[in-house]
Each structure stands twice: as structure tokens, then as C-alpha cells.
Image 1 (cartoon, rainbow, N blue to C red):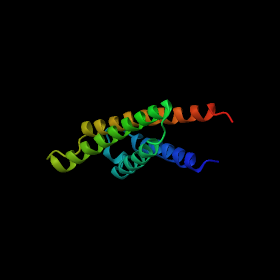
Image 2: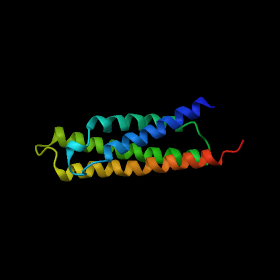
Image 3: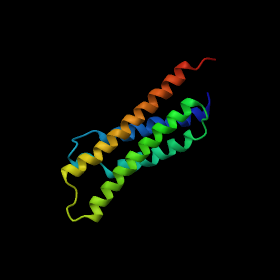
Image 4: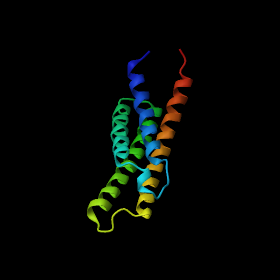
Length: 127
């Protein structure tokens, strides 16, 4: 068992599950989406991105690209949330919440792609 691969898989799957946990629920209802879960998804996704920097294969480059997409979408969602809560007088509306959840949905798709590629690489590994 390779401990480095265990940490790599752990963070990839944790990023996916945290992102899914934030995404699930009524898209326009802010009560169904926790800002703390979004923050945790961003942190774990950034850690997963850093872990992918060491892989110099073609598949490693694709995994890094999917992780960067997830990071960008999650960070954009957090910026939108912060601006709406602290920079505007209107506060959170269902329309803005739908934008934030949609951005996390894009990140979720990128995380699913990353996990599928990782599992495919694992299944193709021959001793």
C-alpha cells in the first residue's frame, strides 16, 4: 500500500463529498446550503490541487486541470456569497443563492470527473 496514494485518494473523495453536501438541497433556499460546508469544500479542494502538482503524467495534467476548475468555481461562489452578504443592501435572494449553488454544481462536475479519472487509472494499474 502506498501511503501517498491513500492521502491523494482521501482528499479527492473528501473534496467531492463536501462539494456534494453543499450542492444538495433546494437550489434557491439559503437554509439548505451552509457557508461552513462551502468553506470546507474550498479548503479540501485546494489541498487536493496541491497534491496533484507532483504528478507529471498526462493523466496528472488532466487531474490538475479538473481540480483547478473546481477551485475556481468554488472560490467564485464564495466571493459572490461574501459580496452579497457584506457588500450590498439587498442581502441573499433566491436568485443569488441559485447562482452560488450552480457554481458549486460546476465544481461538483469537475470533482466527479477527477474521481472517475482516478478510479480509471487505478483499475488500469497492472502489477
